[in-house]
Image 1 (cartoon, rainbow, N blue to C red):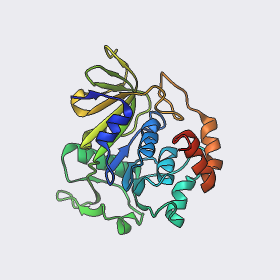
Image 2 (image 1 turned 60 degrees about the vertical axis):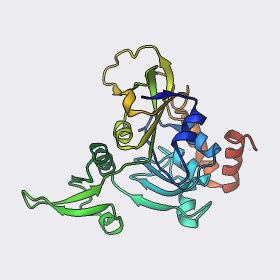
Image 3 (image 1 turned 180 degrees about the vertical axis):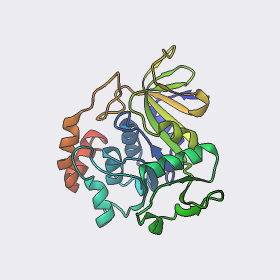
Length: 269
């Protein structure tokens, strides 16, 4: 049964140093407010999992929260590189960061296997790449029925999944719609789940194509209006394209990044 809670209390209970944390959301519904709270709480040694690490993980990595990144694409959407990610990988600042790279299909299949209670998933992927040679969670496999050579990927079961959604009711059922990624799969694969939402309502009105995460799949629900900023929540907020453009300059320089973190997240404490 999901508990309605304030975001700081929910994340303090859900996420511990050294945990593996999947913060999913594709194009929109990216849980930035939750990431900012993890930075404020000073979480360390996290394994960050995400299909498309963008600004949200650039900030967490630059703040020193991450020891490892499991991902399938990384960049500032529509702008360019993630400079805090690059600095960590190339120069070990603010600390060394190990990486585990997959394809989008591989990541989704890993979540699905984890949610299904299976040890691995099988797909026709990674042909022609060298990822199988450098990634322990990818392995060739032969179909026992046809003899076809396929690829297996190990299941993903994060300690914690964190998502943002449009609405939840007071029982903790969570409703999201629009462009969605692997939120459902990540929540069902994780040991613990936190959902931030634009609003908590008495009743969830039907929305065409909406995904409903039942209260038994989510542990904490937090009402956080604007919790996806600078991404957006369809039907509630709009994407701040100027922020993504401005982030490129901020993230290129270590001192500028630290100043931004201090002024916007830590209150220069």
